[in-house]
Figure 1 (cartoon, rainbow, N blue to C red):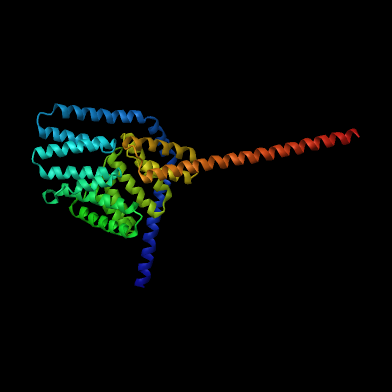
Figure 2: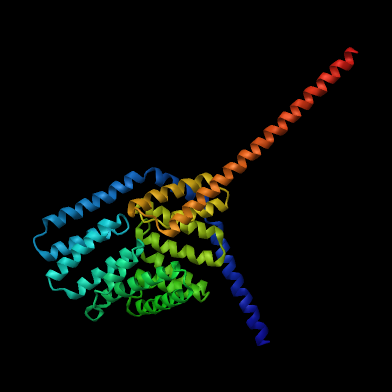
Amino acid sequence: MKIISAYVMTILLLTGCVSSVWGAAKGADLDSLYTQIDEAISRSPQYVAERNRQINNAMEKFIAAHDAQQRLESAEALFMLYKPYKNDSALNYAEVCIDLSDSLHLLGEAGRYRSLQAHQYSNAGLYVEAIDRLRQVNPSVLDNRGLTAYYEAWMHVYGQLGQFTQLRHLQRAYFDRQDHYRDSVLMVASEGSEEYLHLKMDVLCARMQYQEALSVSDRWCASVADGTHENAYACFYRSVVYGKLGNNSLLRYWLGKSALDDIKCGVNDQAALIMLSELLCDDGDYDRALRYATFSRQCNTTFFPCLRDYQVNSFVNVVSQNQQHIQARSHRLIVAAAVAVVLLALALLYLVVTVRRRKS
């Protein structure tokens, strides 16, 4: 009886989970969300102008700073504003932060900024530069914030190297190192931090503990303000969970929400929108998919002139599917036109034959 009860309870729990997921899916108004994204893209120059206004204000504070400490604080603000916007400028202000920290003999801060700069290099596909920077960091002088940035940068670069290497033995070694540094980040990062939460969700998804991952996502989304870049990041990782669950509606919804928030924040380092564009191809919404892919490409090349591999592949895939759709549509039109011509010719022939018979 206990076994039967446990079995029934499990079925009920699973049913509840599925009902909850699909109930949420029905509430995801994708058409409305896509319309909001379309409007946001049309207003993109306004959002970019707002980010530039914030950058100009931070620049004025940097120029007006009376001492090195104030300049350091303003330089970090400029780095954070440029981080998702223009890679070369972010790298420049990270370098300014490093120089100012060195001049103030803040060894730990200098190491943290070197780690942040290394992550920025790695994010742009500049792996040699990232590793060179990280090798200049002495982890023994870092506090928890510095160690979090340091371990996360190593984790990112090894993950990227593992993803793109063609050598199987190196791939395994790189992914092992990525796992090692992921564990290190989780040990030192604050439990409510962005760094901790997204890695916690990664681990739970890898273990197929999707409901627990959604619980972490609930806490994360509740801790960030709607319409911010931070919220866009949280929404992106929520979409990953629904992708693992096979919930295509909510996968698209949370990718779209992530893209929408980033567009409104003037963010150029776009990932969600290009991924959404590929899914829209699968849905047969080719025109919108091409618009989103084209806009995402423009944003990403502004962030960094060379598109990263996944961005190139996604863009090419969308363009290719769009061309195939156009060709297929043209072929259908040609066939339909040919059939219409044949039918018209047959009708005319029938008419001529009928008229001649009547005359005879």
